[in-house]
Image 1 (cartoon, rainbow, N blue to C red):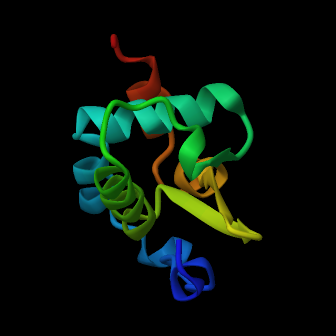
Image 2 (tube, rainbow, N blue to C red):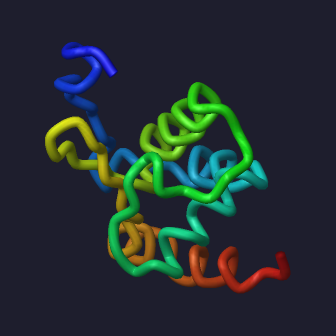
Length: 107
């Protein structure tokens, strides 16, 4: 990771900017849904390299960006590592029962 990438600031939608269409589209992909399940199961942050997914690094970056732009996850930088967390409280407040139902669906 180069210096610019390590110091890149990401913009996240405010809760009132999160749209159900974007959330559903982000969760419709099996890899992204699995990543959200991993975050929910962990109950804590997961580093970008800590996700157990069978995709390339560039594809993982794409999936993380899609989840971030939809408002499903947040991230924080610590040194050269980026830690991702599920925006569960915001999503539960905006769309009651949605995340619970999606996560409870058969795998």
